[in-house]
Length: 248
Image (cartoon, rainbow, N blue to C red; front, top):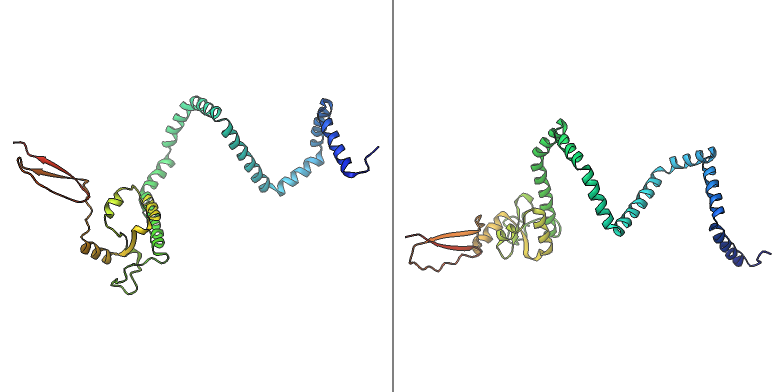
């Protein structure tokens, strides 16, 4: 007798379906029916039309799902992945080496590398100019201009070509030598913006002259030859002094 209460009827039906789905004969019947259903011409036509209408959406969902599954598998099986990659590399080592040698000898690749070398310097220069402009805008909180209130130009120099990043406490050369590229140097400016200011070339040169700031030395070590039996007390800021005496 069916349940009069709809909730009890649904609960009974779920329990019955769960028990029935575990039966081997029902699994076999369901598998055979699904295979026969997918082979029907009308079903194939309906699936083809649906795929053509939602092709991009299906591809995006499948790609996202596959990437998530691959990521989860790599996290759980790191050692298996290392072994698999090592075996794959050993199997394809010689073929990859030969392919790389043949690829680098292609005429189009040689031409591309030649053009890339010719344009790389200009590309790096343009990239550094963009990074420099971003840093100037950040330090000025807007339009780049000279931050010296007594600048010779009224309202401050606004020509980016004449603006320079100045260290308020000096020793700018030492600070710049600590980095290898403009990008790393700009990161330090963003982190410690209170140490820097923007000045035009004139104001910066006047500041260096008035404060007696040290000029940039290309040699990190200053070598001084001292005659024998001579004692000198020499102090040079921000340099390493090496005292060498002549042989008698």
